[in-house]
Length: 183
Image (cartoon, rainbow, N blue to C red; front, side, top):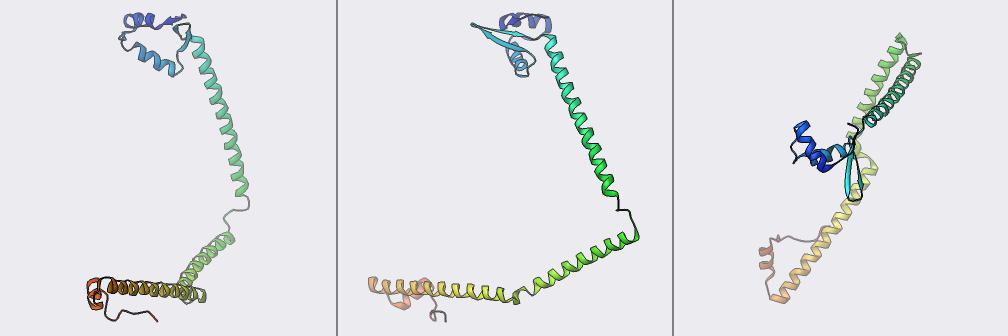
């Protein structure tokens, strides 16, 4: 039908002609509007709905044109890629020399990996690595001595403030008898 309807008209027509309950007409109509299968326009205080066959035909034609364009582009890309493959094959025929070079390449790659693994084993003897370890040890030693200073300061404070014996503080906090600075 090439006609324009209001919601109340559709709520009367749909149950009779299509068997749709009048309660779900509004929901279905909104879904069709959202999917652009039915047009809707507010004129004054009323909403009008319509769906002309020519619109659907034009939408299908546009979709067909888009798909044809995509197909043409895809075919051109495929042809271009096939030409690239053909160009790449030139000079790459399987010859004895090519096979020999491929084997040599694989062998050299494997040998390089073995050398890297062996070099990794001896990394700890690298002078730069040893110097880094020495610097890290120096920083750790300074930090340990700083904490030792802090512990002695807290022990001294506790003795003065609370009158605790040094052996009792050591025992309570698990401080060993030979606790001292690191040389």
